Length: 617
View (cartoon, one colour):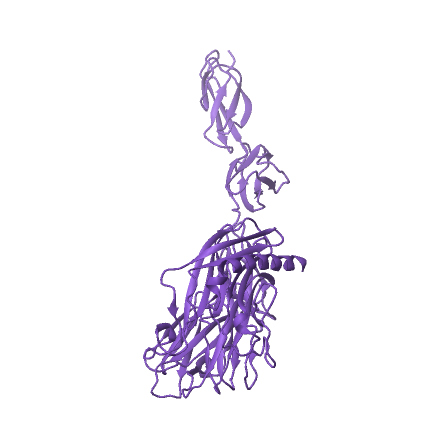
């Protein structure tokens, strides 16, 4: 509170200095309306804009405008000069082209819009920047406040660039020059929007004459009831709509304060000081009848669902032509109009989950006829509240070429209870298990009827690897010298092994005949199994010996034969003759004992002996 008061005092001191410098030029300027906005250009550099609305019955608008910039918390207070932009000074009087306002030498009340701009680099990040402008004096014709011609018009904008760097202020799209017909219902809206998408809240406040003082309303008028109206003036703090039915001719002033919030925290504000004039009319104001002629101006929409609706224009004065424009208040939306004297506007927008908010997204429609001398017009607000569901999906891969992937969906925001539908798996719960690798779609529907779909990609996870089996069969029947080797590749290494005989190495040996199974596990936990059969010769190695003895004493015509069987052929032989004979039959044998070694193709052996005899001498 103390910081805010200090800021106001600093602004007031700056205003006094500025007033002393410009009082001769500004006195009796007949200031009608004004507002200050700012745009961040990057870092702490801001473009400051002053919109000043001059009553054309008064003195000329100033060539430049002095803006005071102050922050109590940072001890800052300085002025910058804004210059008129090219082409400024436009006549914005709501008067038809066949008649001239006082701005063009005519007799009808007229208003000119002057835009001043300049750039400043703020010297630091502060929570309480105030940009302010003051000018003397208000119009003497104002009949609802005390001594108007002696009162300044003062407007300001605030900024917290400490917590919200590079913020841009709300802006206005509708000129603050309401000329309102006595006895006719009328709604006015400034057409406010925020470039950063912040939430806006509106309030009627007493117009200020300095940083710390306001105008004094005459009884029975006040900041919230600034004119005679029946029914009483109404003001919507969420849309900024101000509606009234004036009961008498008068000129009054009111001010609208627009605060912008981000995540429910105040970012900054702008103030608009407005002069309103009531007039006598024989004309009927044009109007619209809401969304698709339902009389409704609010809509609850689902994120992701296209919105399209028509806004038809009406005017009881059949000969008049009506125009309809919008203020581009919703980013990403479009508005198209048809031709003709009673055009129809079509609003189109597809909100996203980023637009989901408890705060409404609003835009304004202004309808105006071509009545003379005063155009009839009204401004209407349309507000859309975007609801819906924000999702997160989490998946785990399908590992080892198996159906073990998972997909889960969690609700970040939305109103339940929720229903779920997974495709193509067909599940109806938040979690899907036992999935193959692939793409899955989940559609979640909330209690509001809003539905949203999301995709979940179950990746192909760790591979199980491959096994190349090699074995060495048993060499001799009945032996146990077989071996088997599992060569693993692919997947994640190192690998672990488990054989059916309990061995845990890649190679097992000393095997008897049989089938051996192995399971290989990768470092990722994937498993793959294979088997190998270890065999042995069908029968054991055997033989049959036969012999032919020496025919006559002293000769060497004896022979011996070994007939091999079993084992694994071919066979080799070794007789202990001299020289050694290596055929199945040993010949040229004399009478003696002979031994033979039988060897099969696997190296299995069998040995025996035979005795060759001879006749007696």
